[in-house]
Image (cartoon, rainbow, N blue to C red):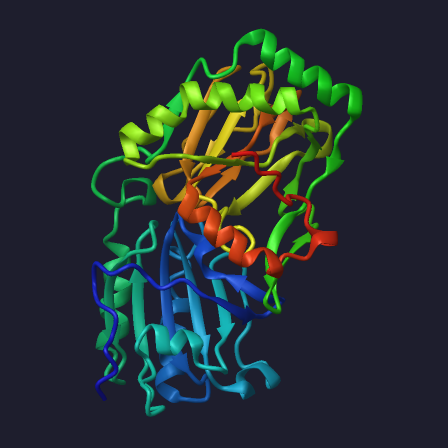
Length: 369
């Protein structure tokens, strides 16, 4: 069967699919470890049973820190008859009854013909190898052997990589940081949610297992302009130099607080994955203080290293990068957290405004240009 199988070196296609216990599992959020995707179609198939058994025998590899296994079923009876189930750590499944994943990876073609497939993926979500599972056992053996020969995830490229970020001290001066912290402390923050795409709409949701952070919105026009001036002076030229991207717009004027007493954190996510956030190009994370522990920004695709800018300093990164904020373990981390973009992205935002649910949107942008 000619399915146009995915091959080594290609980006592994991202998708959102239903999984046991999660109606919208975002596959792109699991970067930062090796992944084996086994598109087996039906656990009633003896060949698939042998493949699943072979994977289960390698619990030394599928630890979630080194690697994770994801089985992909296209047979509804696998769910109704509980033929397969998640086994944490290490083993998870997708219900691909609409063939979304199978089509993306070439395990199903336009005529509906299906083939079993093993795909080994690196921590940046690029394919290392893809192996058809023809029943002789060679495909599964090749995939599991390839995985076993990989170096630690943080050295998947053969060297320890630096996340492609800008790390910029001296963006805000100490007095200005203190002014923003005092504003937050006077007003007191409200729990902020995060954005999800649900039924074609961008909506704000709350889930303390994913994010705990309190925010205030800056309303004073003079203070907004003061933040813009500093970012224009210190950050915009660096983005232009490194990325050849000219920032013309800035969105979201908030002072945020990750508090150790609340368990402040933000799990791995990307900042532009909904229609209401698709226009965002770069995230700017400016620490207003540094007398806290934990709370570092981490980019799992490039290793577990966290980044803690000094007070007044910024970490700037593409909104497409997977990132998370480690829990604050002592004190409070105060931060100013805007997004920046350009006129072309502003046109995208304008087209998509109708898809945002206003009452549920905790990050509805204010956009002085």
